[in-house]
Length: 178
Image (cartoon, rainbow, N blue to C red):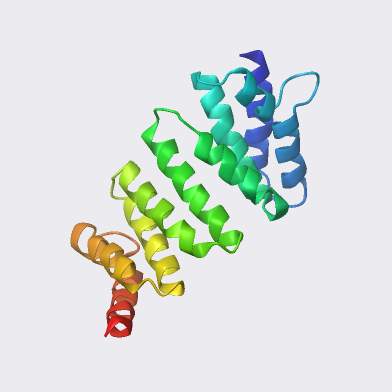
């Protein structure tokens, strides 16, 4: 527990920091410091436990935030996340989608955003993930998936912050389909 609290401390510092120190704090969280394990070692050593799953999720999100040549590691760790928390599961799926988009694999990202929308259905994150799925689907020419996601926002989440954008994009997606 002491090992994970040290890694969590640096992860939390990185999440809440701004500027140049952010990447180095993620690096310390991943690799460890002060003789304590980092998230990578915790994920390996505690695989299958709650602590190991949380470390796996956090490592994936840290690599995603670092970006660049670390995106594949982000995808691998987020795919490996196997915790029971439906909120983190949804965020992990969306994180995979974000990493794929950043890596230039937008077509592969749509299904992860749809999975994220379905992993923890609620008024806040579901329309957000559906909108991401639709936006990426539109950029790849997958208008039918975009229409499906946008109609779901319009029908099920009329009070969502995303509704106006969804309605505009829905009109565009339907026009492009004709």
